[in-house]
Image (cartoon, rainbow, N blue to C red; front, side, top):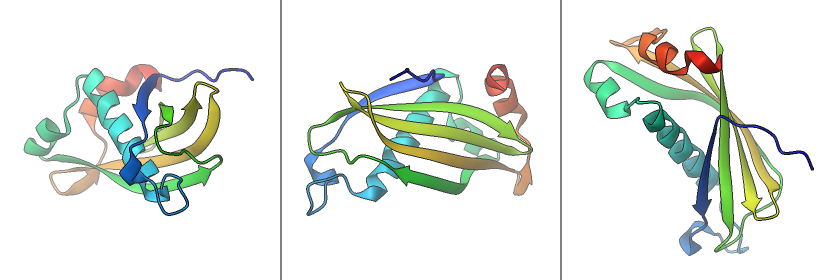
Length: 135
């Protein structure tokens, strides 16, 4: 299988309490994995949600589409990966999660985010500057 290229990859591990009665990761936990990955990506690009919020800029999720492929189980190690693109005022994260070490695709998602600047939906110059090299 060819390896897809990503701009950011974060290794993580499944914790027991994230699994449901079937012994697989509960679907909602994938949203947490993806959010943590986005936040870590932003930090590597010098962007802090807290700093943005204090300046009147709130980045929020507008829509998430998730396709679950292969379940993760307790103690599995996985790689949470992302790419980003811009569509109008939206910052669209393309996120995949792979079980390791076999790199089996577990989940593929599209996460659309927008910025509320001083209470109004707006383009965010700070994010454009930080992420522009990826568009």
